[in-house]
Length: 203
Image (cartoon, rainbow, N blue to C red; front, side, top):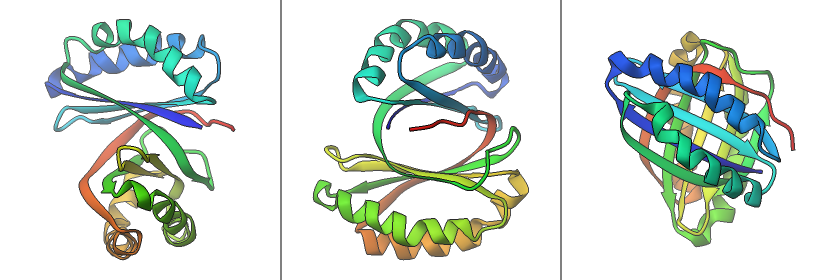
């Protein structure tokens, strides 16, 4: 599968306007497109950050959908968004033990790596990281998304509630240190968001 992420920052006082637009007009536009597999909307209300993720069955479907969404994206995010960044990824690993819940939490880790180590990162995540995450209380889902050509990726870990996410910080920090060294990756950012909307998806 393939993923598009839209990351916006802006005035925290105006974030709800963007959320309403994404959950109404944005969702309708996505659902009309072929090979659509689901979406998620995650926010940090305190700092004014919004992350929207959409899942696609093929790379062509993701690319074609972006031709439609590109025209509507900024109007939907106004007047909140001061900055908007769009990125595309391949789904290297996806693992789910239970559906995510509204009000839950998601931790996002951004990494960089040598493109030649994309396979090593994927295998390390599948063999080492996933079992550690699965043992965390409140764990729901995780995904490793990569852009192998650019040598960048993002790890998303969803928890059923924000208390479980907070309690997992120490345990996941230890795993992140070990697995980053083993996979030859550099962690460049770490963020947490509230889950506002998260659809299940299928291959």
